[in-house]
Length: 180
Image (cartoon, rainbow, N blue to C red):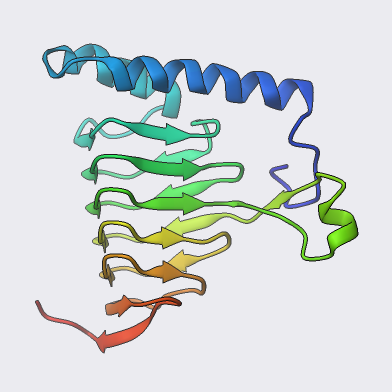
C-alpha cells in the first residue's frame, strides 16, 4: 500500500487498522468541548506525535491516522476528511477550512483492474503557510507549495507552486505572489 503499488484494501490487517482508527475518531467526534485535553490525547494516539499547537474541530475522519504528519500550528475546521492510505504531510501554519477533503487513495482507470477491487495510493504534501478554503478537495499525488491560498470549493488535481492563489474545478492559478 505505502509503495504505491496495487493492493487489496480488504486485507485483514488493513481492515483491522481502519476499524481501530474509526473507533478512535468516533470517540473523538462524540466528546464534548469541555473534554479538550482528553480529545487531544486521543487525537495524538490516532495521528501520532505532532506539535502542541494544533486544533482539530470535530467531526474529523481518516482511514488510518498514522499516515498523517502534521507540522506546527495546524488548524482543521469542522468535518475534515483525510484518506491517508499513503502519507499526507501538512506543513507549519496550515489552515484547513470546514469540509476540506484530502485523498491519497485512488483506483485504476482500466475497468478490468478496477473491478478486481484493487486500489493504489499517491502521497499528498502541503507546504508551510497554506490556507485551504472550505469544501476544497485535494486529490491523490498533489504537492502544494508554500504560501498558497486555495479558494473554497476548489478541486486540486495538479501540483501547485509556491505563493499563488488557486481556485475552481479543476483549480487553476488566479494570482501569483499574492499579498492579501
